[in-house]
Image 1 (cartoon, one colour):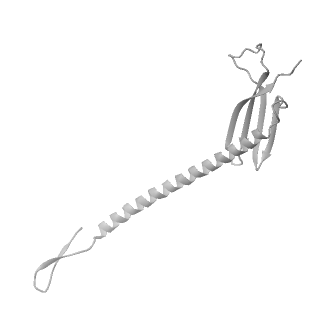
Image 2 (cartoon, helix red, strand yellow):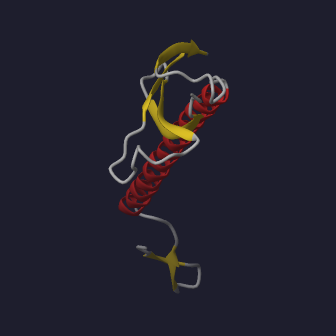
Image 3 (cartoon, helix red, strand yellow):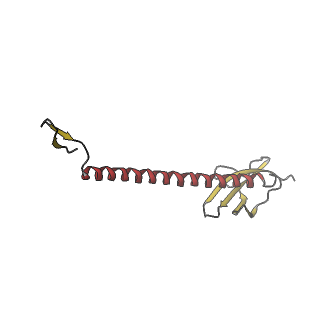
Length: 139
């Protein structure tokens, strides 16, 4: 801070207080930089919250679709598709194959691979893969 000297009535020197123009400009530049940083941090937080909301909506729709699938005895190999609240979805059901499973083993179940894909109107996609066990046909 710069101070200039002034004389009082008794002839003694006293310092005059105040800021120079340079000090004020530097302070304003620091404040502007801080406000810009805070603004970009808030914008990133809003984008993150929006992304979480979108992902949560996709998960809820995928969960609703999985819940609405036919019972395990009625679920056939093939493809189902539709739309819910502007979200397009596909369900692919196919025989499950794994290298470490012997298909000749006598089990009461036949595994099926189920793939649920949900696409939001904005273009985000959620894919859920699971295995459902279907009762082996008797006979």
